[in-house]
Length: 380
Figure 1 (spheres, rainbow, N blue to C red):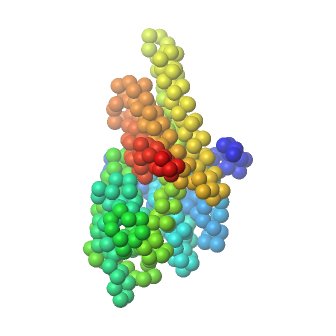
Figure 2: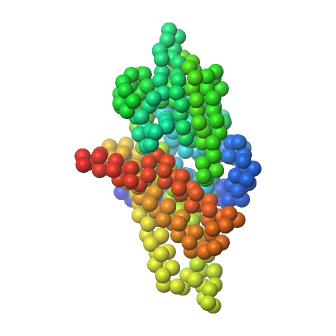
Figure 3: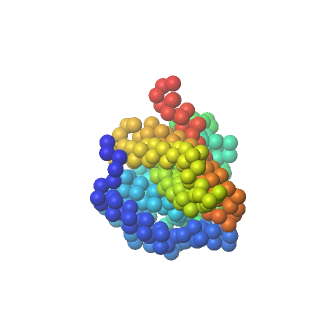
């Protein structure tokens, strides 16, 4: 396994880095936050990403995609992470889009995936519920079957980019007891359907999240995604892919935080010398670098496993997420501390990185959860 980019991937990386540098400075993020922007991202920039082919990078050419691999998507996500870009790539491409690609019928894929790749829709996954923690099988939302379809009743929390989304992929229980893996079914739900209410919420990193309430929302039989009662098969595969994609974004963010910190150590003068010359700070900076490089290897390996369709994907997803959660939080904390008093102020950008680190750490499971999951996958 070669943990380096090839020539084409390197060119893609540079294109993405230039795009982020030109269109999405941290000043834009600050403006979105301070103005309490309802979406928390730009539809115009979303369209520009689609024109570059990023949204369809892993989609088959049949549906207007580029037919490339997850390693290429990793390159894009890492650069978006470097700039803390808030556009809904993770939710639309790796949550909602993957659910349709893996579980959808041919008609569903043909209707949704080309629009996704063209940036004409925002699609996300509504699977978390109150008290579910990281258990995707903790589903209390019920789906009642009728003559013409189904009705959904329940509440979903922490729905990434749920506010302003066009379509939701909703997990609901059609059989079994809460916590059972079998009995979960996925449904495609129009966000503007009667019985669907979406409340905008702000995470501490100012990203778009939503509380979705379903009050006997009607969905037709054609809106079932995959097989009835077997939605967990698709759901688990989707979350592994989304987890791996998130680690690429986290890698980009922690790398940017490390670079900003190193630059500060080189330029901040104390007692007549740069503070980076102090041995204690050198050791701490070296620790940050080592952790980021260990995370890089884990992230690269997980994306390559996806491209190879390896059975080790769930194992590598947990390795990468555990490593990135620990590393990003460490680097975020050190960034603030090494910047001293200025690092504690809202005027400095360090706060954006440490807040993003906290949110990303808890998304799809924190380090402790994934170490435990890795052990369970290996029979411990």
